[in-house]
Length: 207
Ligand SMILES: [Zn+2]
Ligand SMILES: [Zn+2]
Image (cartoon, rainbow, N blue to C red; front, side, top):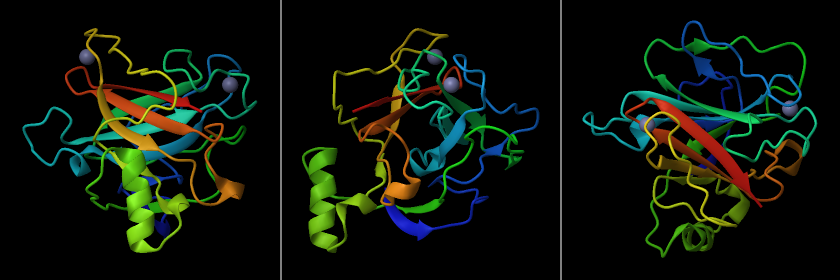
């Protein structure tokens, strides 16, 4: 995933930042630790990853939130702490969420995403290869869709809370090219997972 520049904050496509598209009855997630509203980080149209209609993840949208009301205090890096929230929505009939008035709820910039396929030995190599061959800054790589997670620490693949199986890796995120508006992964990376069978998702970050 590479930056296609600042984009529409209400776009129905895969993006980082902006305002999430959500189904009817959606409630903006709150942090278990501080009770404040979480910050919306990114949404991924799973069709981009699994165009096959037979896929259990086809026809869904993954949406990631994490608490930034008191950075470092709410265990927002942990997949099970309640300091972040990942949701899997049916991708049809979504509308722009109503953003809570208080708290740190959105990022300062929305990035449109382009996809580039790079023949490389893993994600880190692919990032470097892309920057070299495109002549663009490596910070313009926003992450990877599918593939295998490039863990900074130990493998923390979450298990599904419903069926108990390891979740499917969906995407790895970078903090973004503009430090003023970047996502706060402690200079690390974020990792999003889903269980297509149970229609659930999980998120963690490492640095
Ligand atoms: Zn919090
Ligand atoms: Zn499951």
